[in-house]
Image 1: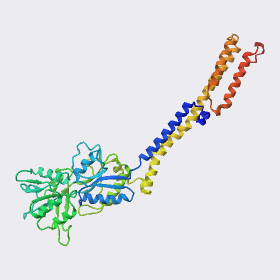
Image 2 (image 1 turned 45 degrees about the vertical axis):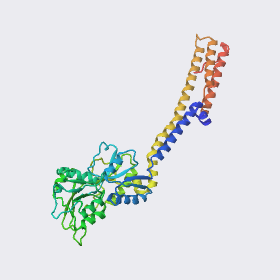
Image 3 (image 1 turned 120 degrees about the horizontal axis):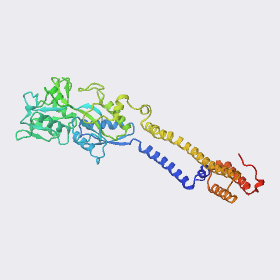
Image 4 (image 1 turned 90 degrees about the horizontal axis):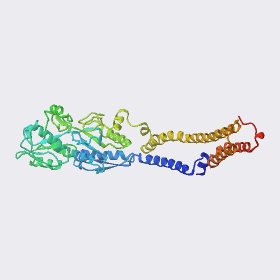
Length: 441
């Protein structure tokens, strides 16, 4: 406090104001630095136990743990429930797997996509000695369309509706999960079942593919579906791809299905977005029976826009710091670069400008008093001047103003020089007219 008042000539209140402002800026910088750190824990909404969604979530957990990020996994019934959780601000969830074609209901501005991570084929298994290649053949049968909350159910109902099939007395829609639907198919209580990776485990799919009682539907209208419904893709399950020795399937099978998107809330930290996409590239970038190597993840925009962070990642990859440094250290350095450096660039010149402004302010005050002294001396030397009493009164006023002012210690020589000049002018005013020295120029 004393340093501020002595050095810059500030009043006590002004000095406290400077201290408070600087302290607030420092506190704001600390809060911003801490608050901008990526969270150490995030939550993903996945799928039911044994599903592809749940299996992939476990893989994400292992990969994120390498960077000391904990991934909590919430089981769900599938894509629809995942989307509902992401849309609900009361549910603590950050990311989730959602298949394409889900309705947004105004959530597009609150959620973003990190890109598509895989194809999600629709498998339709049926019991029949006749080959089934079009969905309209299933009219009047017992159809397992998937549990409520699953993407399987939503897509199944959409496809059946396009074929004019609705739940009636003759056609039954069964809300069975994949395990119950498989048991029903094998027992003969279900005629056909719709299954996808968000709710069906790979073990159940393999079991049905190998069972002699069930057949996998070959979508002969796959091209028509993919052109009529924008989010669907034509996929092909190659001959023998399930079991080469048993030649399963015995022929190429046309399938249809959307892609699976990794959907996040719009406030997801950029560093975590990069980390999740790195994990997606490691998990989903390999070749499989339905995709080529490196095909996923991909910025395929469906119901949700691709986030700005994901767009940057697809164009140039992770930022330099996160490529070269461990995740935790890169986070610290990145925050220093983004927060502390710009603040220092603004504050340092600003703080250096304060003494300049204060010196200029003090000099102006000194010059004002000197101008008053010069004017008083000129009036004293004028042929017709004011009375000596009036001039002394004005000089007393100048001297009193000088004594009341606060001047920084760095201006002490000029301050005491001014007081000396005041005494000099006073001596001239008090001297007899004949003894007055000549006025200073």
